[in-house]
Length: 262
Image 1 (tube, rainbow, N blue to C red):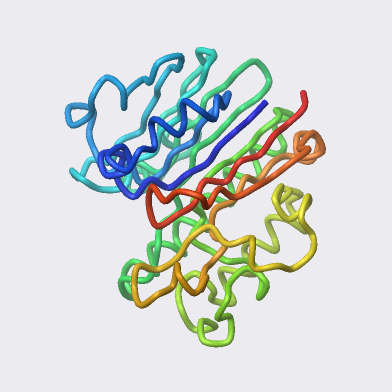
Image 2 (image 1 turned 30 degrees about the horizontal axis):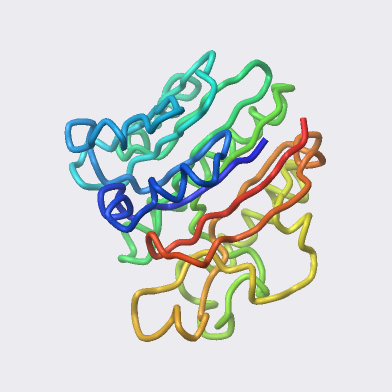
């Protein structure tokens, strides 16, 4: 099973850059998308459900903002838009279109877009609040006994090897000690597995998935690894390859591709 995760930074923009043509060539079983930045009415039939795929989305209430989606070759048995069906006090999270779960038998595939806190203290506070509440859901998911893969833009680089300029970013959103500790807890205590890092334990600069549009970050490969496929242990053990596609650019993020053998 081939699963792709990609922050589109706007599905209309990415489509203009050829992402739909590329996806057809990839022939993935499931594609998880973040930052759709559109409503259903803004999208073409190709964007809503490309040839050979069922499309499901959780749009943000605010136009041109956030939003997640999943393309799948197989029609999901269950589609869950937002966290509200399983949790209380998450209306502010769900209003931003950040969580979509598709269930296929005992397998759940989730497209996730965690907030960025880089625009100021208010958004960083919201990010911490989302992390606290989402951790409860992550604990419940792993205890459910389901096989789960969470694909998305987590907006956190976990370790120093996960970004180029770690020394200069220790006080910046995305690499704050509290954010990194949250991921460590997720992996080391709750039991989730970082699939890419499981398959590529060695530290290299090939791991980056996002580059700032400022300066020459892309040209100089001054990147961050903030896009992950995180899975329950038994599911992570079925991953056989993980790669980041950089030959073409569809957004400021690169697609993360993982092959699983079920």
